[in-house]
Image 1 (cartoon, rainbow, N blue to C red):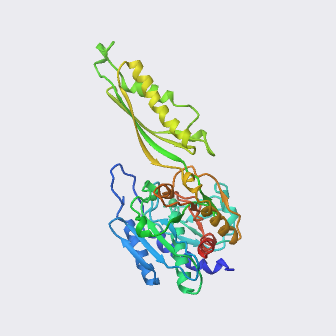
Image 2: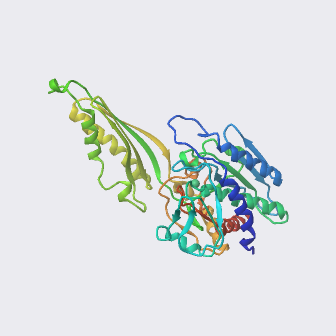
Image 3: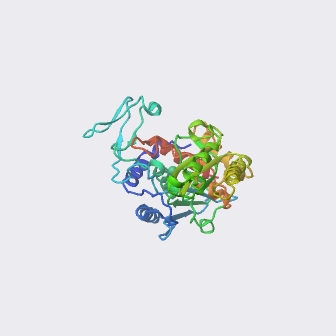
Amino acid sequence: MIDSSIFHHQTEERLLRYAAITTQSRNQTEDCWPTTDCQRDLAKLLYDELHALGVRAAYDEARCLVYGWLPAVGVEEDRPIALIAHLDTAPDVKGSEVRPWVLRAYPGGDILLNEAEQIVMRAKDYPNLEQYIGQDLVLTDGTTLLGGDDKAAIAALMTLAQYYLDHPEAPHRSICLAFTPDEEVGGLARDLDLEQLGAKYAYTIDGDHLGWYQDQTFNAAAAVVTITGRSVHPATAKGIMVNAADLAGEFLALLPRLEKPQYTDGTEGFYYVTSVQAVCERAEIRLIVRDFDAMRFEIRQEMLQVYARMLNERCGEERVTVELTQQYRNMGEVLKDCPFLVEDLQRAIRAAGLEPKSEPFRGGTDGSALSFRGLPCPNLSAGYENAHGRFEFVPVPSMAKNVEILLHLTES
Ligand SMILES: [Zn+2]
């Protein structure tokens, strides 16, 4: 039985160091990976650190990937497992000049993050704070995100590696570590070399709230609806003009009114219109399609084609086209064939004294893509809170507890 408090100091020290390194990724329309050079700064540092710890490691600088391998110790039947965390932070808010600090033994109530700018995290706005009373919290200065997403996971994984190197007698299965870029901008761990990684199964360590895991994600596709109009001077337009902007409005009106992100939750799917650009001559609607259920997901996409055909028939010619791009799939379809992955995870969380909790994740993870590339990969929470914002924070005991969970997950 391990007391996870022995990991407080190491995880905290690591998170403070990693969070101060800018690794923000970038939304892009071109196909250029990694999306930012700065992610390599942390990648190189982690490679050096693994090396210094005595872990066999590799750094693929071009693709910004770090690998580390801990060979099995004292197990009869080895089951190599990969543990994956992402290097980048979200582009949503400022992610450079991050100045993390630690509030010791949070006494409850509001937290003054920034004296000079009078930035306060109000307890009434963030009720999740209450459960961390008495704990040490890693916080921002209120002007940037923290990047505990996903550096709290990196800190836990590096501490796990150090534990096994400090305790060469401790039995464990083969562990393959991977640190990957661009998770926040749909990178989907596309360049991760599964052969080089060398595991048949994996877990991503990401997500908020300690003790949670995910084994269901959305199916996801993106659609571009292109509408061609016919522009003429409005004075002489009768019977000639075809206004693409009007057709765009009609197309939008055909989408089911309540199947939108703001009206759905749980396992309900949706259409989300992300942009509309329209003039008389041409219009373009961009939207994303999401559903947990594979059949409903197919129908949703087919309905977009049906709407286009309806408008084309009325126009008497083809003016509306829909182009669909598949993004990722529900990992649950793959994970149902290897139930032991989730059972192992639940057992490890319980062994650390927590009750495992899960709900379908209304998004995708790198593991969604990896699962369909042949590496089944559920997700374990990293234990951060309020990610992607200036009020992000990480309770130090959550990181330490995650090290304990990972020890139980890898011990046999
Ligand atoms: Zn993340």
